[in-house]
Length: 129
Length: 362
Image: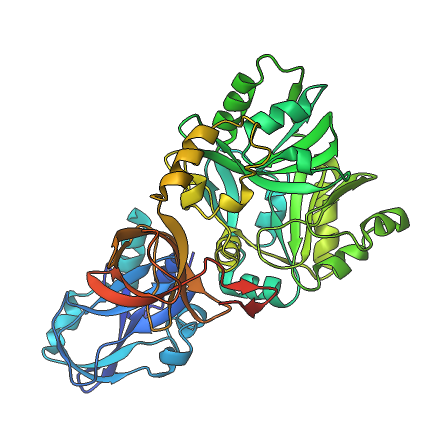
């Protein structure tokens, strides 16, 4: 069973969200997701300053196996992207919840975080798969 | 019913991720498919290919039977142990399977065919055997390990007896020799140096462990696919099948047209296709930008549409490569378009071979 840190929030589409305070969150994909996809070869990220809405396909994780859309788990403005993934997409495999982060968003509405799954809820959602 | 090879427990011990491969539970990777790929290109890796089907053809008419059954001519094989890659066609000229034939004597041959096509291959071979004095014997009691990479032969050598070492010393590509328990062949599916070794199931797990101890990295089906695709080698079921002519699958080189009176199955159809020049062809595609070309994507050319048969990310080159079937007028160096995820992306046409012995070849 893969690691599901309890301090993070999750979307059923396998993104994780970490609150950094001041309405800023960091977003990536879960260890379970990277395990399903296999070795990552390209990651296409949104642009800084993009306005994104919950459910938009905003990034693409392309692995040896398939290209997968990554959906915005929250709405807001992209304020940073992980440029290290350009040359080292494998960081998503080796450290999905850390160095493999994808982008940071300034939330439009902080209460949106409450609608996301907690670790227990995400664990249940992948057990149903 | 899921089949397991004799190495199944070894794969689980090594932490393999197992998948169903045409009814066989096989390792897709042991952690990182890309690292396994690099191990084969730069050092030595090994694959469990025990699921493949080994069939011995023996008897007075073995040679005559195979000269009818396959498109290449086994009469070209005169040195014991020499191997031949070829295809077995239906009456309509479609590829039932691709296979390797090892020659021992005119009355004794060994075939290695795909596992996914095992039942239909055996049914077809038995049907065609009518009137020939031969026996067709499947050999499921053998395991098979492919050891591939620039250091593969040296690492295998550490496990061989003096007699076995002497037998494989200086053996040319595409040969096989039986010494003791091992049938050792200089064949493979990666574009690297190495061996494919057929051995009794009773000793296969022990041999695998000794290879591990000698520093050979286990590699799964994922790496096997990226390696064979970089080498421009066909995968049955993707790059060709029963509806595809060998002429449209980069297998024309395996057709022996001479002598002209050899009546192999599918000959008339192939001769007509050759004369009309209307068959499509298999080419390579290279995309140096981001993105990965995938099987079944549409290829748009000025001469008409084609289709990607196999596409992947090439770990050796760092970008995507693919095999595609396109109209015959498309030429190497042309720029064509591939429909990828709702976008049209420009790619370059190459010969259908990308990497050999660790080096880019297009």
